[in-house]
Length: 435
Image: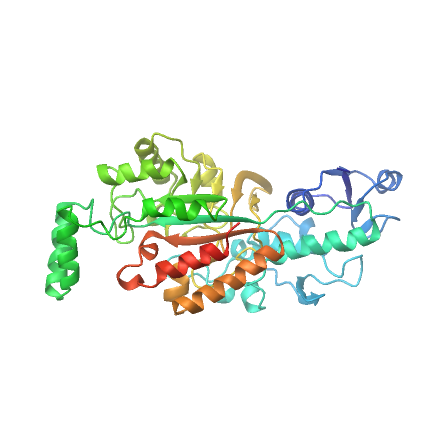
């Protein structure tokens, strides 16, 4: 494949990062940077210049200026549209009417979250304050769309440009916030829960718990064996994120020291990937996350390098250096808790750029775009409407040959209790997203 040559008029770590992300990692084209316009003009093959001054024969993107900065200030990009696609940082100059590199950098780095945005009671960004929500493009993977627009218009100018090397993928991810519904709990928790059910006349729960604990009935959340065949047929990857923290107000999972639960986790690790579900309390606690990771690794007998924070509690950008220090190479937290869509404008996994250090970190961000709890409890959708909304996102991802990642929970997949009807709905979504 021919090498793509790029000259940046005022090169920075930011511009090198985002140009490499779009051209090399998203479009799949080998990339080399060229130091001068004279060197670029002397070359043959696909060429691009990112600067004020065009170069004959090279595709020209006119810079906005964001990538030449070093600090983190308040930025509110202008929004327009080009061929039906929302665009940021529009421009009357260049071969595209916008600076797609500045727009991509703004979104991929969660720039506005780093500069300060309203948070909910759990420290998560309020989606209504995000630029993508305020301007109505959160439901589109616009960064991927911009990369494909670049490829299309650049190829019209230079027919020798290769076609983008992209492939649709489907990743199923499941957060084990409970593990089991009844089994594996400390005796005092079991007694306390039973008493509450009795006092509130929840007779079905009382009888069900009794039968499960006596081994006469399967635990409602123990759906793991059925999932193996279901997920293997439709997904490229399956990942379970395990909560190992001691019980607290927001952390309720069965201890991984429980023999039956530990056995289930080892069975899961034979056919799926296992990641850590860092607890509610360790948002910026490096020592705590190290302890929780150690507990999971000892239970599995395997090294763990994947993470997704419980309650999606991360602080951007500080959480990612913490994960790197603890040996994680992938994080799957980047998504929205209260609406659907693309928090960072993409459905393609990407390397994180740390705005504090002004450099790439050795951790890949895997954004998800839909979560079961959001569908039922935040958007108040019924299962059929949820399937429809999720399938619309799947279509968006397929259109750009990206990666569709859904976030599901064992409690929803159980199709039990308050989640009755949701297990089948999630399975329909997963089947619609099949790779």
